Length: 379
View 1 (cartoon, rainbow, N blue to C red):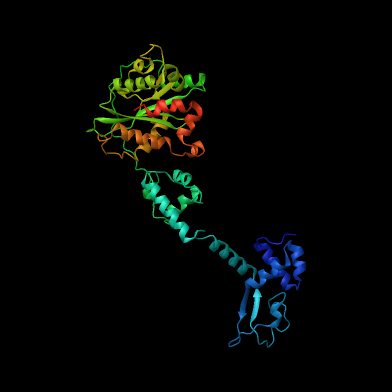
View 2: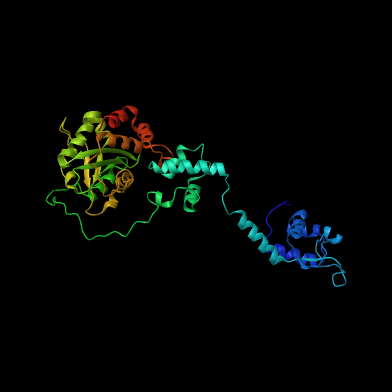
Protein backbone atom coordinates (compact mmCIF):
# COMPACT_ATOMS: atom_id res chain seq x y z
CA UNK A 1 0.00 0.00 0.00
CA UNK A 2 1.33 3.41 -0.93
CA UNK A 3 1.81 5.78 1.98
CA UNK A 4 1.46 8.98 -0.05
CA UNK A 5 0.29 10.20 -3.42
CA UNK A 6 -1.93 12.95 -4.83
CA UNK A 7 -5.64 12.42 -4.21
CA UNK A 8 -7.80 12.99 -7.27
CA UNK A 9 -11.36 14.27 -7.56
CA UNK A 10 -12.96 10.81 -7.84
CA UNK A 11 -11.22 9.71 -4.65
CA UNK A 12 -12.40 12.85 -2.87
CA UNK A 13 -15.98 12.10 -3.90
CA UNK A 14 -15.54 8.59 -2.50
CA UNK A 15 -14.23 10.04 0.78
CA UNK A 16 -17.26 12.35 1.04
CA UNK A 17 -19.59 9.44 0.31
CA UNK A 18 -17.79 7.22 2.84
CA UNK A 19 -18.14 9.87 5.52
CA UNK A 20 -21.89 10.17 4.84
CA UNK A 21 -22.20 6.36 5.12
CA UNK A 22 -20.27 6.35 8.41
CA UNK A 23 -17.32 4.33 7.04
CA UNK A 24 -14.20 3.90 9.11
CA UNK A 25 -11.08 5.61 7.84
CA UNK A 26 -9.25 2.28 7.70
CA UNK A 27 -11.92 0.83 5.39
CA UNK A 28 -11.72 3.93 3.16
CA UNK A 29 -7.96 3.51 2.98
CA UNK A 30 -8.30 -0.08 1.78
CA UNK A 31 -10.99 0.92 -0.74
CA UNK A 32 -8.94 3.79 -2.21
CA UNK A 33 -5.50 2.22 -1.75
CA UNK A 34 -4.50 5.24 0.36
CA UNK A 35 -2.95 5.47 3.80
CA UNK A 36 -5.58 6.26 6.49
CA UNK A 37 -3.42 9.07 7.85
CA UNK A 38 -3.47 10.77 4.44
CA UNK A 39 -7.26 10.55 4.29
CA UNK A 40 -7.55 12.01 7.78
CA UNK A 41 -5.30 14.94 6.87
CA UNK A 42 -7.24 15.48 3.66
CA UNK A 43 -10.53 15.85 5.54
CA UNK A 44 -9.11 18.03 8.34
CA UNK A 45 -7.32 20.28 5.82
CA UNK A 46 -10.38 20.83 3.62
CA UNK A 47 -13.35 20.79 5.99
CA UNK A 48 -15.64 23.80 5.66
CA UNK A 49 -17.29 25.89 8.37
CA UNK A 50 -20.97 26.05 7.41
CA UNK A 51 -22.84 27.23 10.52
CA UNK A 52 -20.68 29.63 12.57
CA UNK A 53 -21.88 30.39 16.11
CA UNK A 54 -21.36 34.00 17.13
CA UNK A 55 -19.00 34.64 20.02
CA UNK A 56 -18.09 30.96 20.23
CA UNK A 57 -14.71 29.81 18.97
CA UNK A 58 -14.67 26.52 20.84
CA UNK A 59 -14.20 23.30 18.86
CA UNK A 60 -16.50 20.35 19.43
CA UNK A 61 -14.49 17.51 21.09
CA UNK A 62 -15.90 15.06 18.52
CA UNK A 63 -14.16 16.98 15.71
CA UNK A 64 -10.76 15.91 17.07
CA UNK A 65 -11.26 12.37 15.75
CA UNK A 66 -12.57 10.73 12.60
CA UNK A 67 -14.49 11.88 10.59
CA UNK A 68 -13.56 15.41 11.84
CA UNK A 69 -16.85 16.82 10.46
CA UNK A 70 -20.43 16.99 11.64
CA UNK A 71 -22.00 15.03 8.75
CA UNK A 72 -23.24 12.05 10.82
CA UNK A 73 -23.46 13.73 14.23
CA UNK A 74 -26.80 13.03 15.98
CA UNK A 75 -26.85 16.55 17.48
CA UNK A 76 -26.30 18.28 14.16
CA UNK A 77 -29.94 19.29 13.75
CA UNK A 78 -30.56 20.02 17.43
CA UNK A 79 -29.40 22.79 19.70
CA UNK A 80 -25.63 22.35 19.28
CA UNK A 81 -23.48 25.13 20.82
CA UNK A 82 -20.48 24.49 18.52
CA UNK A 83 -19.55 25.53 14.99
CA UNK A 84 -20.51 22.98 12.35
CA UNK A 85 -18.18 21.60 9.64
CA UNK A 86 -18.61 19.47 6.53
CA UNK A 87 -16.34 17.97 3.86
CA UNK A 88 -17.13 18.86 0.24
CA UNK A 89 -15.26 17.02 -2.54
CA UNK A 90 -15.52 19.82 -5.11
CA UNK A 91 -14.27 22.45 -2.70
CA UNK A 92 -11.40 20.18 -1.62
CA UNK A 93 -10.38 19.64 -5.24
CA UNK A 94 -10.39 23.40 -5.90
CA UNK A 95 -8.16 23.95 -2.86
CA UNK A 96 -5.75 21.23 -4.04
CA UNK A 97 -5.56 22.69 -7.56
CA UNK A 98 -4.83 26.17 -6.21
CA UNK A 99 -2.12 24.87 -3.87
CA UNK A 100 -0.46 22.90 -6.65
CA UNK A 101 -0.47 25.87 -9.02
CA UNK A 102 0.74 28.42 -6.48
CA UNK A 103 3.56 26.12 -5.33
CA UNK A 104 4.97 26.15 -8.85
CA UNK A 105 4.92 29.91 -9.30
CA UNK A 106 8.05 32.01 -8.91
CA UNK A 107 11.60 30.66 -9.00
CA UNK A 108 13.39 28.25 -6.72
CA UNK A 109 16.49 30.34 -6.04
CA UNK A 110 17.75 32.64 -3.30
CA UNK A 111 18.63 36.30 -3.69
CA UNK A 112 22.42 35.86 -3.64
CA UNK A 113 22.41 33.16 -6.30
CA UNK A 114 20.09 35.25 -8.48
CA UNK A 115 22.44 38.24 -8.25
CA UNK A 116 25.39 36.04 -9.25
CA UNK A 117 23.56 34.57 -12.25
CA UNK A 118 22.36 38.03 -13.29
CA UNK A 119 25.91 39.39 -13.24
CA UNK A 120 27.41 36.44 -15.15
CA UNK A 121 24.71 36.54 -17.85
CA UNK A 122 25.00 40.33 -18.23
CA UNK A 123 28.80 40.25 -18.63
CA UNK A 124 28.64 37.31 -21.05
CA UNK A 125 25.97 38.83 -23.30
CA UNK A 126 27.81 42.16 -23.35
CA UNK A 127 30.81 40.23 -24.69
CA UNK A 128 28.73 38.73 -27.53
CA UNK A 129 28.52 35.27 -25.95
CA UNK A 130 25.54 32.98 -26.34
CA UNK A 131 23.57 31.77 -23.32
CA UNK A 132 24.81 28.25 -24.03
CA UNK A 133 28.45 29.40 -24.06
CA UNK A 134 27.95 31.35 -20.82
CA UNK A 135 26.43 28.29 -19.17
CA UNK A 136 29.29 26.00 -20.28
CA UNK A 137 32.02 28.42 -19.22
CA UNK A 138 30.39 29.05 -15.81
CA UNK A 139 28.98 25.60 -15.14
CA UNK A 140 30.29 25.57 -11.57
CA UNK A 141 28.62 28.91 -10.76
CA UNK A 142 25.32 28.50 -12.63
CA UNK A 143 23.33 25.52 -11.39
CA UNK A 144 20.54 26.06 -13.93
CA UNK A 145 19.86 24.67 -17.39
CA UNK A 146 20.09 26.73 -20.57
CA UNK A 147 16.30 26.51 -20.94
CA UNK A 148 15.82 27.87 -17.41
CA UNK A 149 18.18 30.77 -18.11
CA UNK A 150 16.21 31.69 -21.24
CA UNK A 151 13.00 31.51 -19.20
CA UNK A 152 14.46 33.87 -16.58
CA UNK A 153 15.30 36.33 -19.37
CA UNK A 154 11.88 36.04 -21.04
CA UNK A 155 10.05 36.60 -17.74
CA UNK A 156 12.18 39.65 -16.88
CA UNK A 157 13.89 38.16 -13.82
CA UNK A 158 17.35 39.27 -15.05
CA UNK A 159 18.87 42.58 -16.07
CA UNK A 160 19.48 41.10 -19.53
CA UNK A 161 16.37 41.35 -21.70
CA UNK A 162 15.28 39.58 -24.87
CA UNK A 163 16.33 42.62 -26.88
CA UNK A 164 19.91 42.07 -25.72
CA UNK A 165 20.02 38.62 -27.34
CA UNK A 166 21.17 38.55 -30.97
CA UNK A 167 18.42 36.36 -32.46
CA UNK A 168 15.56 36.64 -29.98
CA UNK A 169 13.78 39.46 -31.81
CA UNK A 170 11.76 38.50 -34.85
CA UNK A 171 13.18 39.51 -38.17
CA UNK A 172 11.37 42.11 -40.23
CA UNK A 173 9.79 41.01 -43.47
CA UNK A 174 12.47 40.98 -46.13
CA UNK A 175 12.22 43.23 -49.17
CA UNK A 176 13.08 41.85 -52.58
CA UNK A 177 12.93 44.97 -54.66
CA UNK A 178 16.48 44.54 -55.93
CA UNK A 179 18.53 41.52 -56.91
CA UNK A 180 22.27 41.37 -57.13
CA UNK A 181 23.49 41.36 -60.73
CA UNK A 182 26.76 39.50 -61.11
CA UNK A 183 28.79 40.32 -64.21
CA UNK A 184 30.08 36.76 -64.59
CA UNK A 185 27.34 35.15 -66.66
CA UNK A 186 29.85 34.07 -69.32
CA UNK A 187 31.88 31.93 -66.91
CA UNK A 188 31.78 28.25 -67.82
CA UNK A 189 30.71 26.39 -64.67
CA UNK A 190 30.30 23.01 -66.33
CA UNK A 191 31.05 20.24 -63.82
CA UNK A 192 31.04 22.83 -61.02
CA UNK A 193 27.30 23.40 -60.46
CA UNK A 194 25.25 22.49 -57.41
CA UNK A 195 23.96 19.36 -59.13
CA UNK A 196 27.58 18.35 -59.70
CA UNK A 197 28.20 18.99 -55.99
CA UNK A 198 25.34 16.66 -55.03
CA UNK A 199 26.73 13.97 -57.31
CA UNK A 200 30.20 14.48 -55.80
CA UNK A 201 28.85 14.06 -52.25
CA UNK A 202 26.95 10.95 -53.27
CA UNK A 203 30.09 9.36 -54.67
CA UNK A 204 32.31 10.67 -51.85
CA UNK A 205 30.13 10.65 -48.71
CA UNK A 206 33.07 10.85 -46.28
CA UNK A 207 34.81 13.82 -47.92
CA UNK A 208 34.88 17.18 -46.14
CA UNK A 209 33.33 20.09 -48.04
CA UNK A 210 34.14 23.62 -46.88
CA UNK A 211 31.76 26.53 -47.47
CA UNK A 212 33.10 29.90 -48.68
CA UNK A 213 31.53 33.36 -48.67
CA UNK A 214 32.09 37.08 -48.08
CA UNK A 215 30.38 38.75 -45.14
CA UNK A 216 29.22 41.73 -47.18
CA UNK A 217 30.21 45.35 -46.62
CA UNK A 218 28.76 48.81 -47.15
CA UNK A 219 29.38 50.47 -50.52
CA UNK A 220 31.91 52.95 -49.18
CA UNK A 221 34.17 50.22 -47.72
CA UNK A 222 37.23 48.94 -49.52
CA UNK A 223 37.65 46.00 -47.13
CA UNK A 224 35.58 42.83 -46.89
CA UNK A 225 35.71 39.76 -44.65
CA UNK A 226 36.18 36.30 -46.15
CA UNK A 227 34.68 33.30 -44.30
CA UNK A 228 35.70 29.69 -44.88
CA UNK A 229 34.01 27.06 -42.68
CA UNK A 230 34.18 23.30 -42.24
CA UNK A 231 30.56 22.51 -41.20
CA UNK A 232 31.15 19.16 -39.48
CA UNK A 233 33.59 20.75 -37.02
CA UNK A 234 32.19 24.32 -37.10
CA UNK A 235 35.80 25.30 -37.79
CA UNK A 236 36.14 28.75 -39.35
CA UNK A 237 38.95 30.63 -41.06
CA UNK A 238 38.56 34.39 -41.51
CA UNK A 239 40.54 36.95 -43.46
CA UNK A 240 40.16 40.68 -44.14
CA UNK A 241 40.79 41.50 -47.81
CA UNK A 242 41.29 45.00 -49.23
CA UNK A 243 39.54 45.63 -52.57
CA UNK A 244 38.66 41.93 -52.94
CA UNK A 245 38.76 40.29 -56.36
CA UNK A 246 39.27 36.80 -57.75
CA UNK A 247 43.06 37.15 -57.66
CA UNK A 248 43.11 37.90 -53.91
CA UNK A 249 40.77 35.01 -53.15
CA UNK A 250 43.20 32.73 -54.98
CA UNK A 251 46.05 34.21 -52.93
CA UNK A 252 44.14 33.29 -49.75
CA UNK A 253 44.18 29.61 -50.71
CA UNK A 254 47.76 29.81 -51.97
CA UNK A 255 48.83 30.99 -48.52
CA UNK A 256 47.10 28.00 -46.94
CA UNK A 257 48.94 25.64 -49.28
CA UNK A 258 52.28 27.32 -48.53
CA UNK A 259 51.76 26.89 -44.79
CA UNK A 260 50.53 23.30 -44.65
CA UNK A 261 51.84 21.78 -47.90
CA UNK A 262 50.03 20.32 -50.89
CA UNK A 263 49.48 16.89 -49.30
CA UNK A 264 47.86 18.34 -46.19
CA UNK A 265 45.84 20.75 -48.34
CA UNK A 266 44.35 17.88 -50.37
CA UNK A 267 43.44 16.02 -47.16
CA UNK A 268 42.07 19.04 -45.31
CA UNK A 269 40.26 20.93 -48.11
CA UNK A 270 39.22 18.38 -50.74
CA UNK A 271 36.18 20.40 -51.85
CA UNK A 272 34.70 23.92 -51.54
CA UNK A 273 31.11 25.12 -52.01
CA UNK A 274 30.54 28.84 -52.63
CA UNK A 275 28.19 31.29 -54.33
CA UNK A 276 28.49 33.00 -57.72
CA UNK A 277 30.28 36.09 -56.47
CA UNK A 278 32.71 37.34 -59.18
CA UNK A 279 35.52 37.10 -56.61
CA UNK A 280 35.07 33.31 -56.58
CA UNK A 281 35.10 32.98 -60.39
CA UNK A 282 38.74 31.88 -60.93
CA UNK A 283 38.08 28.15 -60.87
CA UNK A 284 41.56 27.06 -61.96
CA UNK A 285 43.23 29.54 -59.62
CA UNK A 286 41.45 28.06 -56.59
CA UNK A 287 41.58 24.40 -57.58
CA UNK A 288 45.06 24.10 -59.13
CA UNK A 289 48.25 24.09 -57.02
CA UNK A 290 50.76 26.82 -57.82
CA UNK A 291 53.52 24.60 -56.49
CA UNK A 292 52.93 21.33 -58.35
CA UNK A 293 50.36 22.27 -61.02
CA UNK A 294 48.08 19.42 -59.92
CA UNK A 295 44.49 19.67 -58.73
CA UNK A 296 44.40 20.41 -55.03
CA UNK A 297 40.61 20.60 -54.49
CA UNK A 298 37.18 20.62 -56.10
CA UNK A 299 35.10 23.81 -56.44
CA UNK A 300 31.30 23.97 -56.72
CA UNK A 301 28.86 26.87 -57.01
CA UNK A 302 25.41 27.24 -55.47
CA UNK A 303 22.42 28.08 -57.64
CA UNK A 304 21.70 31.82 -58.01
CA UNK A 305 19.87 33.47 -55.07
CA UNK A 306 19.64 30.24 -53.01
CA UNK A 307 21.80 30.90 -49.96
CA UNK A 308 20.23 27.94 -48.12
CA UNK A 309 22.45 25.62 -50.15
CA UNK A 310 25.39 26.77 -48.00
CA UNK A 311 23.64 27.37 -44.65
CA UNK A 312 26.65 26.89 -42.38
CA UNK A 313 28.69 29.78 -43.71
CA UNK A 314 25.53 31.92 -43.71
CA UNK A 315 25.12 31.11 -40.02
CA UNK A 316 28.75 32.08 -39.35
CA UNK A 317 28.10 35.39 -41.09
CA UNK A 318 25.17 35.96 -38.74
CA UNK A 319 27.48 35.34 -35.78
CA UNK A 320 30.00 37.78 -37.25
CA UNK A 321 27.30 40.44 -37.22
CA UNK A 322 27.75 40.51 -33.45
CA UNK A 323 31.19 41.99 -34.12
CA UNK A 324 30.38 43.81 -37.37
CA UNK A 325 26.79 45.12 -37.31
CA UNK A 326 25.05 45.79 -40.60
CA UNK A 327 25.60 49.24 -42.12
CA UNK A 328 28.83 49.64 -40.13
CA UNK A 329 32.24 50.03 -41.74
CA UNK A 330 34.97 47.37 -41.55
CA UNK A 331 37.71 49.51 -43.11
CA UNK A 332 39.25 50.11 -39.69
CA UNK A 333 39.53 46.35 -39.00
CA UNK A 334 43.09 45.01 -39.06
CA UNK A 335 44.49 41.54 -39.70
CA UNK A 336 45.15 41.21 -35.97
CA UNK A 337 41.53 42.14 -35.16
CA UNK A 338 40.27 39.42 -37.49
CA UNK A 339 42.69 36.92 -36.00
CA UNK A 340 41.38 37.66 -32.50
CA UNK A 341 37.74 37.32 -33.60
CA UNK A 342 38.62 34.08 -35.38
CA UNK A 343 40.22 32.84 -32.16
CA UNK A 344 37.06 33.75 -30.23
CA UNK A 345 34.85 31.76 -32.61
CA UNK A 346 37.15 28.75 -32.57
CA UNK A 347 37.20 28.62 -28.76
CA UNK A 348 33.48 28.96 -28.23
CA UNK A 349 31.79 25.86 -26.68
CA UNK A 350 29.03 24.63 -28.97
CA UNK A 351 25.98 22.50 -28.23
CA UNK A 352 26.41 20.77 -31.61
CA UNK A 353 29.88 19.61 -30.49
CA UNK A 354 28.73 18.43 -27.04
CA UNK A 355 30.22 21.50 -25.32
CA UNK A 356 33.59 21.13 -27.08
CA UNK A 357 35.02 24.00 -29.11
CA UNK A 358 35.76 23.95 -32.87
CA UNK A 359 39.46 24.06 -31.99
CA UNK A 360 39.07 20.94 -29.82
CA UNK A 361 37.24 19.15 -32.64
CA UNK A 362 39.83 20.13 -35.27
CA UNK A 363 42.76 19.02 -33.15
CA UNK A 364 41.02 15.73 -32.38
CA UNK A 365 40.53 15.03 -36.11
CA UNK A 366 43.59 16.58 -37.77
CA UNK A 367 46.11 17.03 -34.96
CA UNK A 368 47.58 20.00 -33.12
CA UNK A 369 50.52 20.49 -35.50
CA UNK A 370 48.26 21.13 -38.50
CA UNK A 371 46.06 23.38 -36.35
CA UNK A 372 49.01 25.57 -35.41
CA UNK A 373 50.18 25.83 -39.00
CA UNK A 374 46.71 26.58 -40.33
CA UNK A 375 45.31 28.98 -37.79
CA UNK A 376 48.16 30.74 -36.06
CA UNK A 377 49.98 31.61 -39.27
CA UNK A 378 47.27 31.85 -41.86
CA UNK A 379 46.53 35.61 -41.55
